[in-house]
Length: 492
Image (tube, rainbow, N blue to C red; front, side, top):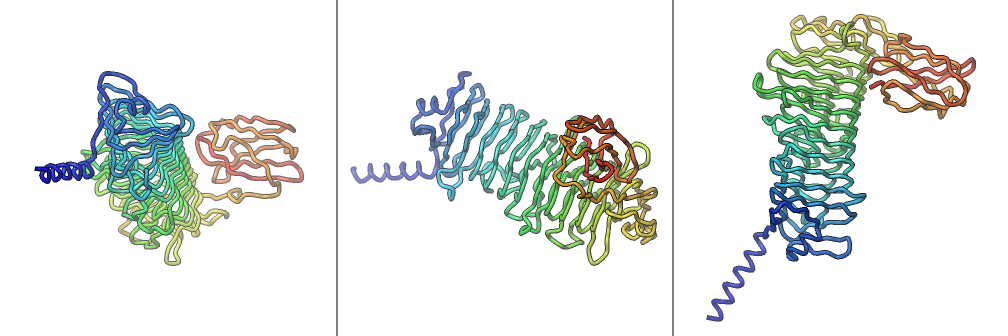
């Protein structure tokens, strides 16, 4: 009898090791801290000063709120999952959520539909990512790093499913999976603003760092003012992709503005019909890590199997990609029509196989591309521009790229007559400030085509200048009789 009892106990103990227990909050509408949970269930959370350890799965019930509002470190045991049906608010000056053992990651977070999630000032590391099934998700000023595959999410370290989630001011680096993703057939329109994104998708799968599917029909996807840097040791990882694989059944409505996208396999990829996007004032450089022109390397690649794509692009800068822009099948782009779109895109040294390709129109469509700088740093002839554009002139089955008028001012190359001079803010909404310690007398502002669009007289000391210009990229020339400096100005 004693031997049987011991055998049963050993079996139960072994089962407890293999299947982690789950603590669920009381579901009574209460608000609970980690200390409260530790008091209610000492086997779930242990506490030592500001160090907390989670030893069982934690589930926040539908009617409950869990609040972390003091500086602390929460260390989580291997394979454990935090699931939220109610509300989770994590907001103090400095919070760290990590693994007890970095070599044994926890499973991550799962935020169920209808839950409300708010993270601020938090480091989230060595877990399985954030599976966001809720419409109510905000994460701001957080660091998300060194998270792994095989946990709560398999799409991206932040995996989105619905609504208009807010992802702002974060640092997202060196995770196994892409930084931000959504399902191909799930309508979601996040606001992705001012994030620093580097070296994600360390597994080097064929996915970009921001990898999104269809958007909501009445809410615009916004990818604005982010820095997206690739790991040059990875040859399959792109910058941004937004794809509609469902034709009339799907939709893309997007603004992609003021981002810096460098050192990826490609810069930006938009796929599918029923797609409308503004793409403005992005810096897209050195996206060539795979170095296979037939497989990628475009600053922007557009591809649609049927008509119904409208991309409006202005003020972007393309440098040293394998292709500047590639337009494929029945895709289309407006790079400047001389009316509603000013153009003002800048191209430099995009090419492969010894040939420069500012744009490759691999469609039968006529593309408007007026008022762009096709060869940065020089005023080009028509033939010089023609030589960097591939279209009907090169292959009679293709559509035309209408590129005249064109101009590239020498102002696109900064002068350095005066050192250590700057103005702020930049980008700006139409006002700049600076200390005129060099006694400049005049501020001339030129568009990217070299046309003078504004002149202002300056005084010594502190100056504030209202620019009153449309959104775009400009060059500001500060000068007096003996010195001058030219600097890029971006107006949002």
